Length: 276
Length: 133
Image (cartoon, rainbow over all chains, first blue to last red; front, side):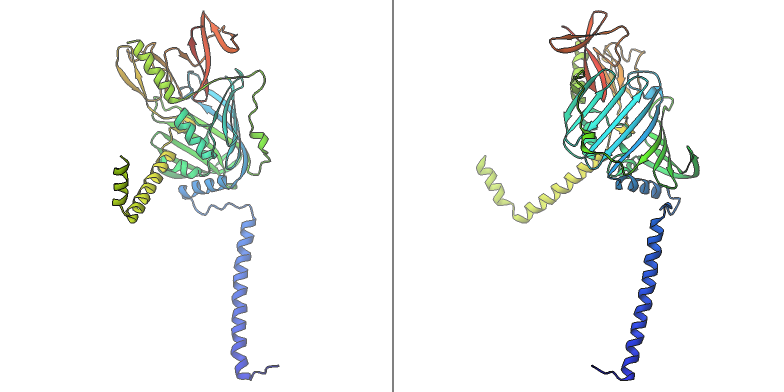
C-alpha cells in the first residue's frame, strides 16, 4: 500500500472537497431545472408576442399525433359562391409527418379533407361526391401543392404544418402583446398581428400555450369581413391509427374530377372568347 | 451538337462546375422557400386577386369579392367568384332549387329547367358545369 506524507495529502483532500462542492452545486441546479420542467407551468418567459407565437408553434410542432376542434364563423363575403354567413364545426386530426383529416360540418354541407400520405381526397358528404388526387408527400408538401395547383388549403392549415410560426410570421408586418384575457374560461395571452391581407387577433392559452381563439379581419375586401375560429378539445397525444386517415368512398358516393386552377382559367378564357 | 457540348464540358473545370452546382443549389433553396412562404391562402381563405373580364372586353380586378355584378364589369361571362377565382360561364356554385339527380351511362348529372349539370370539385367545393347530353 502506497503511503503519502501529510504535506502531500492535504492538497489532494482540498481538491476533492472542491470537486465535491462543485458537483453538489451542479446537481442542485440540474435538480431545480428538472423540477421546474415537470410542472405544468407555462414556459413563456416574457410578453414578447413573437416569443409567444414561437412557443405556440413549437408546442404544436412537437405533437406527433394531435386532434382539436374549431368552431369557425365566416362573414358572408368570405363564403364562396354564396352570400350568407357560414358557421362550421371543424374536427381536425393530424398524424405527423404525412396524414391529416379535417371534417367541416356547416349549415350547407359536410365536407371531408383526407390525406393519407399518398392521396388527397375531398368528400362532399351532403352530395355524396368525392375527388381523389395522388399527392405523395408530407403535410407541408401537400398543403403547398394543393394551394398552388388546386387553389385551396384545408381549413386553418397553418396550425397543422410542421412549423406554424414559419407559416404565420412572414405575413405579419407588426405585432403587439395586448395583455391577458379569459377566453371560454381559459386564461390567454392576447396578441394583435397586423398583416398585409388580414389583421388577426390571436389568443394563446397561458397554461398550455395552445391557440384558443383567432379573429382575422380581411382588409383586402370591402367591409373588412371576418373569420372567427374558436379552438377547443386539444389533444396532443391522440390515439390515431393509419386506418383513420384512409379514405374509403361510400358505395353510394360518386367520383368526380378535381379541377385545377389552370384548367379553370383555360375554360374561363374559352368562355370569354366565345362571348366576345 | 454533341461535339459542342463536349467542347463546353472540357472548357469548364471541375471547380467551376462545383461553383455552378452550389449556385444552382442556393437558387433552388431560395425558390423553394419563396414557394412555401408565398401561399395564396390566409387561414383557408384565398387572397389572390381575380381578373374579371366582361362581355365587352373590359377588365376589372376583383379583389376577393364574392359576387361581381353591375357596371358592365361582368355579366353572364363571369359572375360568381368562388374561393378567389371566377367561375366561368356555364359553371354554378349551387344548384338551383328543384333539381333532380339523373344517371346517364353510369355518370351522375343533375338537371333543372332543362339544363344538365355535371358535378366537379373545385377549390375544395363541389361546383356544377352545364353540359349537353
